[in-house]
Image 1 (cartoon, rainbow, N blue to C red):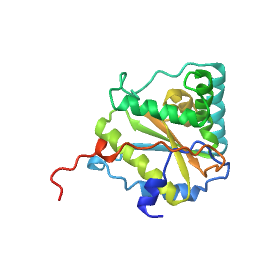
Image 2 (cartoon, rainbow, N blue to C red):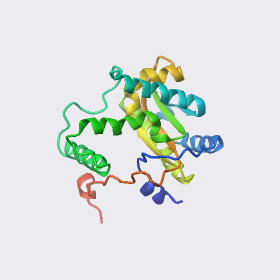
Image 3 (cartoon, rainbow, N blue to C red):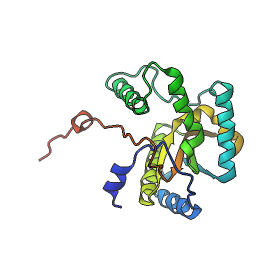
Length: 222
């Protein structure tokens, strides 16, 4: 698989089979992802990989919180600006319409939307998950480095015929994740990432992208 195919075939998969992902494959991916660029080579990402019984325990604890109606944990970072301006608000709204519309859930059915969202806590059935942390002392540039690391991991997973889904949703239950992983206090959970083989019977809707002229400006080119 070449780089272009990896980029264009990567998408947020929300349905995985229970086929195990070999540890040597995950080690190969993460060893290569270590070459992700980072300013002054800080390499500010801290990744934890869960499979087997430990992942099952985390899923169980998270699902129990959902079933009990527990409120989300106090946020440790702002996932979205409180008031998204145009065109970002429209893009987010269109994503929700497409995502839940593909599941046959109307916009006004908030309960059904919440049920669909609860699949996050089962990692959409994935047999492996990565949880990415960053040191609290880091700034915006280092958060950008973490994003590049995650993208590199996802593209390498495609080269291994695997799919993934990044999930900031896990940051809402960061205390539950910490109960299982016991990370140092100085680390903040940025997101989880479900990893596995795609369930071909699950919804395969892919969110579109803005036209190039909305996001790119060519200046004095040819």
